[in-house]
Image 1: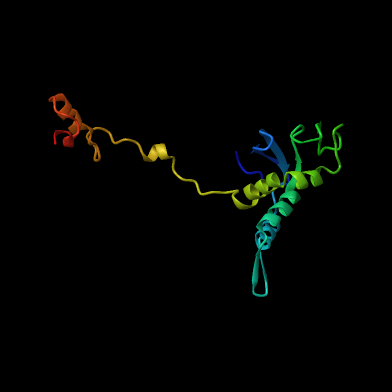
Image 2: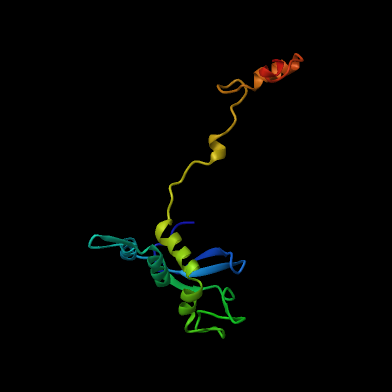
Length: 160
């Protein structure tokens, strides 16, 4: 599926170990400026001191791109909440609640969208590690087969 270069809403699913369920976030792709801001804010230099702000940056920028979540993925005191104003479960404080109680998921979204959104494609290992055909370089099966057919042990050290 091609990447949609637009402001259309995207979605990403996470396996949440705390609730033992799948959480689906709706989000928007960050702009180049937002990506640069994200990278620039992770480490701050103040005089001779360097401060690591990675966790705060992930939550801050993750919240900027979150547009919502799948209905039923979050509850408050047993009652489902929604990000959608049209839903009977709409909670106007949904983003505050997600920030306060699910910042780990917000950070995970930020990591996936801002940090590891692309990886170099590597060849499939199965294609690389195909066994050589009989008679090709690297084929050693023939020697053991011949030895076994003559009634000899397959492993040359087994006779010692």
